[in-house]
Length: 252
Image 1 (tube, rainbow, N blue to C red):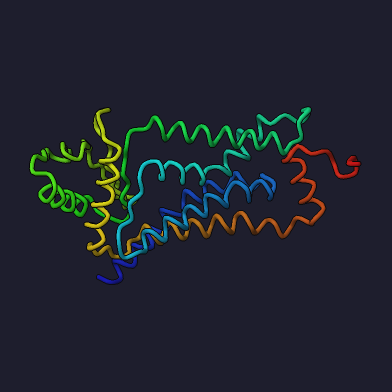
Image 2 (spheres, rainbow, N blue to C red; image 1 turned 180 degrees about the vertical axis):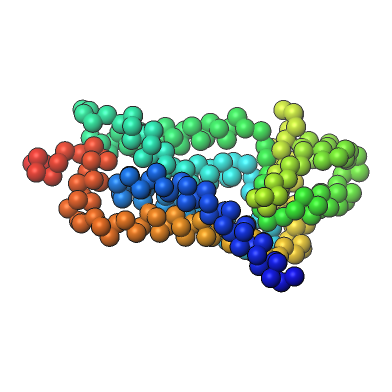
């Protein structure tokens, strides 16, 4: 039985690393500086997810935090992808200001996304059964008029109505708002009370944590390993090209 469990873990690890290997294959043609910019933020995000899934307790993020952290993880890919493609090579403004404007536009887009999105809670390192049990106990304790139908919960006194979505492959459970009549203070209260309930829940380490850690390691190696082939002057030239600055010999 133990050998079978180890075999399943190895298969799961290989399945998790396969998309990373496929992703890194075309990036071999990218210059090392851009490759590092693209992969390091995503690797840091995966390390954060790995740490969460290797904890002994579930972790709760609100929807705005989840969106913001994901946008931060993807910022490197956006920088070397659409932003770099749209950035003009000749402009009356220095490249620093152009990049600052592009990043501010990206941050504005993320902020607008958070403002128009419905309230949501994301519970990491937990199962749907654990979350449902905690929600039912919470409803019995604080909401005598609560209505529960399948995976839908209506807490009229708190002012929230949501559906429980489970993503077993990622080890996460989401509480997604149903309808537009929602109380934002009620969602904050729900998050606080649900966090207290789940703090007493034991959450053993899962395979997702190791897969996320392995994917982050592969990305770090893929981003940093090519840098040893780049000398200082070549790296400096690439950075100035990315920033849309004139060549060093033309300055002054």
